[in-house]
Length: 165
Image (cartoon, rainbow, N blue to C red):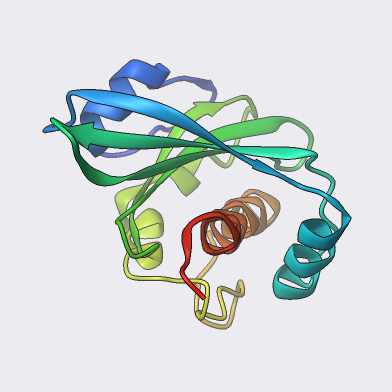
């Protein structure tokens, strides 16, 4: 699917796993508990308040080798929540972002390959700011901002959960 268009369910969780990690044979759910220390650290990194109490990652494996991780984001666009999956490699680098559910009547162009490809290669060290290093979609500014925030959360939370310090 090149892009989602407007309003719809585009990928189930299973379909998105296969799309993002076609060689994956199984997945394990890992949980990051957001205690006050983790929430404060994440809030500082994100420059945005963190309301999540726990964060889930799907660790994708082939045999016993980790291929990468999926963070499933749920962020509000103009009015409705949108769901998208962020695929990260074993170093926490964004490999792909996939719009899975879009509930608005307009602005679905944020699911386009042209918009989503901007996130490839981003890490927790990346600025990931709309209109700075991510070009938004005209007429879908709030959706563009929401996806950018979701990707920032993905790399930030990945760093808190998996990075070796």
